[in-house]
Amino acid sequence: MNENLRILGVDPGDKRIGLAISDQTGTIANPFQVLIHVKRDGDARTIVSIAEKNDVKFIVVGVAISEDGEISPSGRKAARLADMIRSFTTIPVILWDESGSTNEARFARKMMGAKRKNLKGHMDDLAATVILQTYLDAQMSNVFSNTNPHTE
Image (cartoon, rainbow, N blue to C red; front, side, top):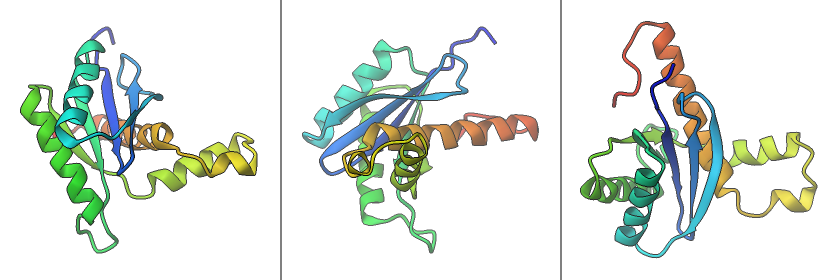
């Protein structure tokens, strides 16, 4: 595949925003950067700038969904950030269930042999990587089941 399909993953938080970016084939997510949350419009402008500089084709924003399928209060904040990002760019912005991404990032770090004290710090970029990788994996399974990937 020679088409650039780089995708940016966003894990919004109250203090920090984790970013992950895919390879050019849109297959593998990698930790990219952690932003310090300032305010929604400034964060959105920074995310758009990063997306544009990296020739991103889609932005995937993690949204927390409760066990009963409702968007949580933090998920509503993430959805508002996604709306703000949309207001500054024509790059498609997709909401994606991020439930459990921090715990998965912590588990992955533990499996890689991290010491206990290193499991307590922020994992925003790793959580963004988990969010993005689950999105990418779902799109690949859609490709194999003959549905259209990368649509909302």
